[in-house]
Length: 477
Ligand code: NAP
Image (cartoon, rainbow, N blue to C red):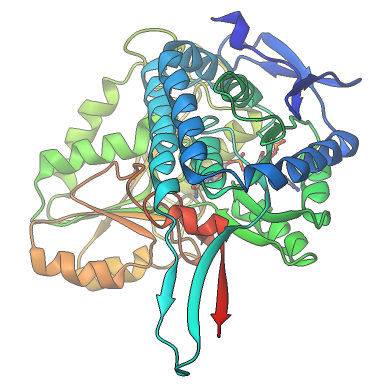
């Protein structure tokens, strides 16, 4: 690992800040300490907010071209250091190195994309009802943005927010997840090397998330909260943000249905299920949580899935050919165990896996469960582990009803060869994103985000920057 990128202090106003308290960051595979990191509290949070607020006064006045150039310089350094960043990510988060490299590239793509979008924040001139007036519309950065992110994509979830924020002219205070602050800190180091001015990016790692959350939401200097994480914490932050009427972007939990119709290309559907479910050992917000398979092809698909799942290798993310790695922590393991047990108690069957690996106490064996009912806990909660839960269905009408029978609405997947069905389901499925005959849908050029309790706002695409801009109307006589 490139030690110069392994930072252990908070990053405030361009300085690496030591705190009295520190907290451990452990490698989930070796379960050994990687490094102890500065544990920020209210004092550091307010110092970071003040720094971001002061920096906003100048950063927001830079030209779009200057901001674009800085973001491109940051992008170039991330790509230059991609292998080292991926190793840091795998060491703190556990995911296979190949996936970590994919995440670094994926996150970097947002930085390049928004460097380009910075140049396209156009205004409008609108016809006026009064001949003496002109209606002008200009766009202004919202101000300081508080960013709170999860551990499952510790680099990309930050890049997806910081890039549009900086492109728009905002400055940021970031609270990374306690399990994975190192990827975030390494990104801050590269941002500084890229010449992004002091105070524009501030980073406050902490073991006391709610203290930082309250500092960010209680300060009027912070004009927006951009959060990715669970729906439960999203609701807390939304209610706190209401106090100062801060704008919010909420990328929250999912419960993706993955529907395979009888007319689908079966091999491609099986590949789609495998890619969607087992990436990051099932710890993704868009991964297939409920796999609905038409009863006429159910057994054929189950047999093919068993062959594929049996071939998955478990182990350390740093080993070649390993695709299932440790879950992030004990709470994650306990949740997967509880959901599998309650499904078994309800009559579901474990075809393969179903328990912890005998090789490692944090690796859950890749699992297939059949005869799952759509109203069991395992189909109503995010599993966040490598467990496929398979539900047979008989009609399009019933499966759409079951797919929509959830408060979540992030991603959905449909495999079918019928273009009329694609058109119908595009309208009927209640979800922010739908993959038709595709199991991996996220990229920087598409608008990522959910409906219902999966949140609000969009990240990526031409829509992503508007979450960081206020519209200002000028009536000119
Ligand atoms: P989480 O428990 O909600 O934590 C997310 C972040 O919020 C972490 O940084 C956490 O800090 C912080 N946090 C926790 N309580 C807080 C509070 N009271 N005030 C302020 N911050 C607080 O979620 P997670 O378990 O890390 O991540 C998994 C969840 O994220 C899943 O539900 C997944 O679906 C969702 N997710 C959604 C998307 C999307 O784009 N929609 C993408 C990825 C993940 P600590 O780390 O210190 O607890």
